[in-house]
Image 1: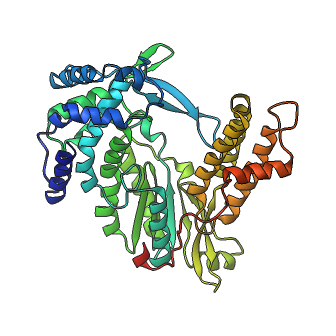
Image 2: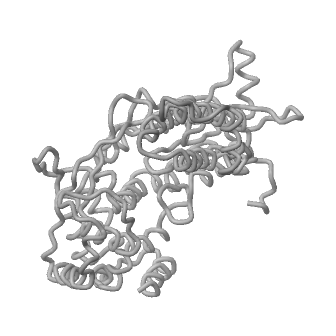
Image 3: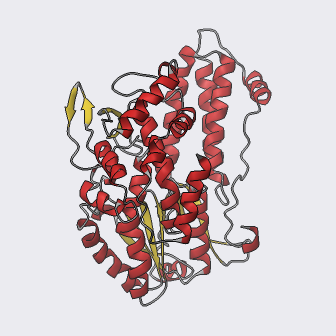
Length: 441
């Protein structure tokens, strides 16, 4: 099965305009469905039917044969997604998620494994989100080197209002049909998109949007924005600019870099109309153009102000200097993300003290701090990581000592316990220095 999917990718690379007319048998293949079963996480939330991976696997082969038969006869009907809410960082609102049932997750993953090799060959290099072998750090690295080494003087930050809730189904299917000629695949995806949402026991129809939390949703969103934004910028906008123009996107977060201010202003005007044509809305209050680059600091000082900053992927980018006084792109953890990380850590510690033993609580806290540092401990961000590390250490000490009326640790004993579990140190884990040689990348 893996070999067949690899061949699909090879054909897509050799024939960029080919339309695939025979794909559905890969989705219905029992071996593919079985591989999808083993790839799914057993601890994920359950859908409306409450079936877990363990329960489904008690009679796995019979269930997979039955599912494959339903798919082959086009009798498969996905269940509504269960609505769930999670806190939205930096806001009092909550982010809605759609949790699929376990069997629907199998089909979503099977469709994703079949289509992903095709679109990985079609996607532009400017897209980094939810793609195999690509990460936020690679996107940040490319952005930093572009600002450092290219003629970049202005940056446009843009934001799409509720992207996942406003994906137009008709446009989505038209985009899929550019490469997918097997109508059975299109029909299954249509049923998934229109399966509806169950909330408080009531099912509401899905006329637009693709639920966050779905396994297939990241791929579909990348396909949608590939045609709406990526291709448009790379093949039309860039060629029509007077100077250099560059573009970076991670999921629905994107920004554009320009040599001339007039190009940035023109793109902003055109962007609004472009998104509205595909049922999307540009958030004008969060979309702004700013001067940023090697001349931004000097120009700002001449005006009696400070150079502007922008935030992308959780980092605030600002105009810094090397030890020799030359311009350098620097990053620090954004204030909002740092506060959110500490708030989440405090809430976790407060709840964990009631259910975890001291050793388990220490090891779990270590994993959380390690996860934060793995992402944010990049070049020039040592200070903000040290602030998080210091406060997390203090918060853990406070709530460990509240596990009972008797004090659990003295400060010396606490430091010994941290040494025993290997408490993380603040060291730079990701080299994003834009001055390093290209051969090292």
